[in-house]
Each structure stands twice: as structure tokens, then as C-alpha cells.
Image (tube, rainbow, N blue to C red; front, side):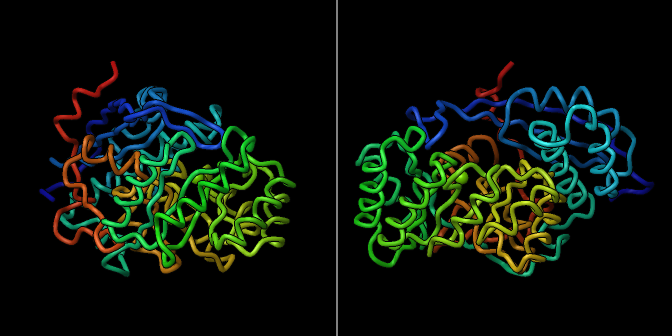
Length: 365
Ligand SMILES: [Mg+2]
């Protein structure tokens, strides 16, 4: 850091669209591209980079509402900036889209702070481990047999000991194919891989109980969003009825959402690009710890490494195929999973990643 107290001078946003190689779907949504919204914050001659997977409107929200409260602030006071941004969004609603915008800024602010100190972000957070376990994730309901086999090969090459596919096809309308694909995953992955499934809220409560019983028989250990995560009492009943772990939390926006879900899941999922950046993720992980729960980082693998390495109650990090493909297109310095782990950056300042100039071709105007 150079002399004098730096202040936030500049905040810029970018919107990037990355098409998927083929149309993709889970139990309740289909898509053909992923939109990444980046935020860069500059102070004291350094620039921090954050991002979220959202809609272009998140960049609009940063430009319309958040830049004003960030201007000329102390870049080292990340918690103060977080609170100011949260307050600025009061009338818009502080969850969902608004919190995705706050998340991208918060990640940029932490990256900036670490760069101002010239230290890796994991060191700033007090990372307690040098590597973070990952599990392979993808297996879209639109995938054919060859595509699933190819994904499993990729996860095996990365050393993943857990693999997750999407089920609940078309709002739970094809349970026969769902269970067939789980058996197929077992056949492809082998006996020692932990089988995980994600229904993205596609089943009704009774259906989820019946499918869950079949999953228990197939040795599945992780049943993610069997029903809508808004149905907390339903999740609680499923948690009691099934052997497999019930997981949810990818839409958690804040500590209040985390506190609502924590009593009804076996593992709380948290997404730093949605729950308030690194600041919000660490706070929500503490809520999980107060319920004697582990947390699992949802998607955005490269982004999550510094905080995932910091909390003692981490189970794993989701190595989601769409984001694994996208991250090197958007960023430079993205680490690759090997032997089932992602290593924590211990040398480069900040999270160690910068915008990839080649991402320019994906800019949305
Ligand atoms: Mg999910």
C-alpha cells in the first residue's frame, strides 16, 4: 500500500454471456447460456474483482444504487461498505437480485483489500486448510448417455469422490428415468463414489418421500432440494423420513434465510455470489455451525476457495460443470481440481484471478 489512506475511486461493471454447448435443464428450469456480472473496484492503485451469476440487471443495480454509497469510502472497511449497500437496497428488497449485486461488490472489495496489503485472500481470512475438497456436479436431465459418461470421466480425472446429477425431470414427471439415470451414474462412477442427486425442488412432498426411499435403496447419500426450499416444514419431514442427507440453501440471501433452513437440512449449501459475497457467506456459515451443521459451497468453484478454506465446518465445494467451463473464459488464474481438491492460492495477492481479456467477445452490450 502506498502512503496516505486510500479511498474507493472507481467502480465498473461488466456483463458477459456464455452459451452452453447444448441446451441444458434440471428438474425445474432450462437454459442455453449463463450470464456473469463482474464488478471491479479500484483504490490506492489496486483493483479488486468480484462477480456473480445473475442477469444484466444486477450490473444496472450496482451502477444505479451501489456506486453512490461506495464512492470515497475506506476500501479496508468491507463490513461498513456491506452494511451501507444493504441499507441502500431497502426499498428494492435486500434479497435475490439486489443481494447478487451486493455479493459481486463484496467479493471485489475483499479482493481489493487483500491486494492493497499485497497478501493472498486466504491468508487475510485466516484459511485453516491448504486445499478444499470438491465433488463433480452436472448430469443435466437433458444429457444423453454419452454426455453423462463424458462428464463422469472428467470428474474421475479430477479425482472427485462424489458425483451429483440432476433428477426431478420436468417437475417430477418422469421418475422412472430419474431412477434409471441414478443407476447409470452408479454404473459409470463405480462402487466407491458417493452418489448425489439434486431435484431443484421438482417433486411434491409425497413424491419426494417415495423417490427418497428408492434413492436410499440405491445408496444415494445426498438428496438436494427434493422439494421447494420454501417448504421448510416439508424439508424437515423428509429429513426425518430418509436415510440420505437432505441439502438445500443455494438461494439463501442472508443470515435470516440461513437460520430458517438450518434446522431442516443435514448440510447447508451457501453461494457467495448470492448470499452477500464473502462477508455474507462467512456469516451464514457461522449460522450453520450454530446448528451443528456443515456447509457446502454452491457452484462458482474458483470464487469460493478462499472462504471455503477458512471455515472449520466445510464439507465440500461444488465443481459445477457449467462454471468449471466458464471460469477460465471469464478469468485468468483459475485453478483446476486435481486429486479431488482445489488448492488455496498462497502466493498471488487477492483471490489471484483477473479478468481474461479474451472474455471481451462474450460482453453483452
Ligand atoms: Mg442445486
